[in-house]
Image 1: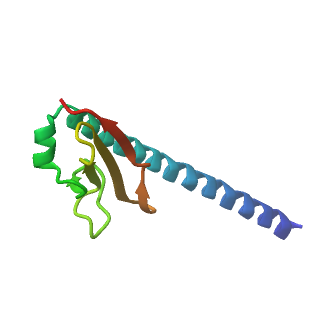
Image 2: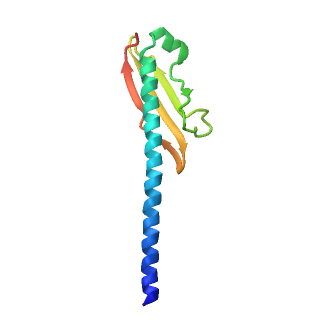
Length: 121
C-alpha cells in the first residue's frame, strides 16, 4: 500500500515540477517576443521618417541590413538578430520587411516578419 501512495506522490511532484518549468520558460519567451516586436516597430518608425534618397543610401535594394536588438542574441552566422530588407521596385513606394530572429533559452526563436509598404518623405 505504501509503495502505491509513494508512486502517486512522485508522479504528482513530477507533474507540478513540469508545470512550473513550462510556465517559467513561457514567461521568458513572451518577454523576448515583446522585446523583438517593439524593436521591429521602432525600426519601422525610424525608416518611415527617412527620405527616399536616405533609404536608398542606407539600405541597398534587396540586401538585408542587420541591426542590434538589446537583450537578444543573434543566431549564427547572422551578425545581429534584426534585419531590414527594402524593395525599391516601385518608383514612389518602398516595401520594407523587418525580421527579428534570436537565440533563445530553448533554441532559435523569431517573430512574424513586419511587412509594410509606404511612401517615404
